[in-house]
Length: 332
Image (tube, rainbow, N blue to C red; front, side, top):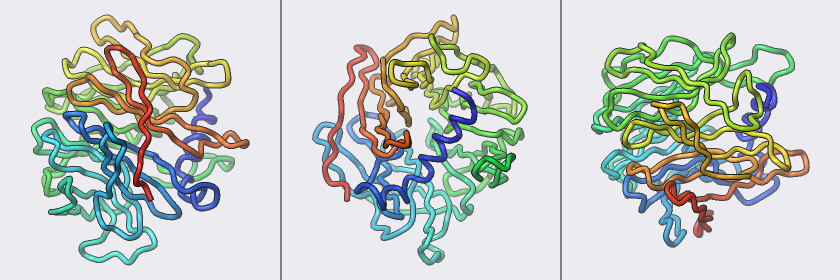
């Protein structure tokens, strides 16, 4: 897949709230799995709003996390003890107040004890550190385009970390990436991995030291069979496995009916790659439970314009490779 085509698909997903208002009753765009795999958090977009719901994967029953009436809740992440969720909140058309401002939010899974960091709208995708003391998140420095034929979207990404109260902010990278994925932190808390791409560099996985930022420990450019673009492989959604010896990720390959975005595992010692799913078509939002036994992701259906408009949630047994669809009830 070319960089241009990938950007087009990414922009289509960013535009889904408006599409949802016109064409269908709502869509799931992001998700997280609790450490014990007994709960999931999904981001459900409908009309101009996007709210986080908690879902029991055994029953599919969903309930709202908060009582926000408008705006957008995005990129949920569970704390290591499973008691709290961090996410990005943007009141959008609502009236911001001291308790209702754009930024990162931490809240108990029952919706109580809400704490917000008033960071503005350019800091996203918070992730808890394994010791439950810090959040790592990304911020962009430029919203626009580098080409008159491209739609404006966020650029100049870097990673930061802060205490759970939003203090002691530390910048982890200083590279102003063209694109950057959500990070995954190793279970010992020493490293983090993210997929990044620069204006002059191709897409790659980069492992950074959290003890000595911005030290790059290793760069990976995994190549899968029938990959969409050998020069700049379309990889995303990296997830450290618990033993720190491998990473699960998604990559695009040429399939029977277009590109397939399947789940792979790369061994960090041998660089060998194992394919865990086959023929996903367009798929996103891979996330893995803390024990490494269960992965979850979204498969998308497209309209006649080839724009992704409807998603379905799937659970993947990492050992057996069995895929199970989750029918969610209660999203409104």
